[in-house]
Amino acid sequence: MIDYLNLKNSYIAAIQMGLMLNTGYEEAKHGNELLHKFCENCVDNSNYSEQDKRAMKHDLELVKETLSQEIELHFRGV
Image (cartoon, rainbow, N blue to C red; front, side, top):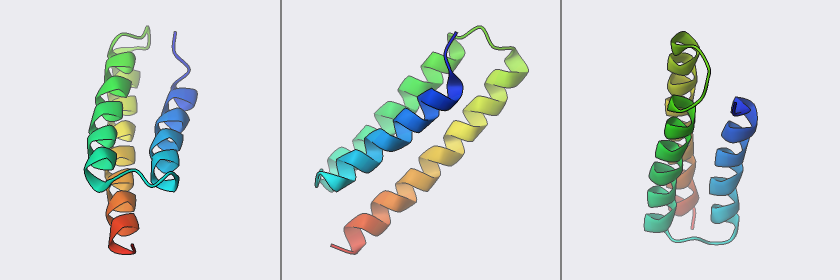
């Protein structure tokens, strides 16, 4: 069983670390898409109930959107 909060926090930390290390715009956007899909797959393959999986995937979608906005703001400020 995956620890959902650890997975989500690792996703967020990975994107933020990439921004701190001056990853390029395209790499940051691609990384966000890739990590989002990876996290969704982890949730899909977990033993959580279908209702919990739907809630987690919805939460991950919100995280993805928030990170997309953070990426946009980061590169507009450069």
